[in-house]
Image (cartoon, rainbow, N blue to C red; front, side, top):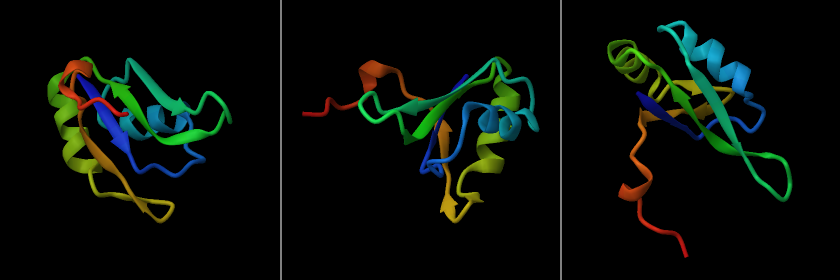
Length: 87
């Protein structure tokens, strides 16, 4: 299951996400989305966990968890086609 992680501290790395979600099960991939122009984090990322029950457990445990003063937003990622287009 692909998981969206938002409102992250800008200092969060992909390794940080792997460690955080790894407490709940196997993490196949963790990616922090970076701004192409500045090279800085955009404050959100995605974690891919192949076991859905482990992913559900991680979502329930980590959503609204404070990390460095910011409340994480954690939920199942929507497919690209389901998101509204930005202009």
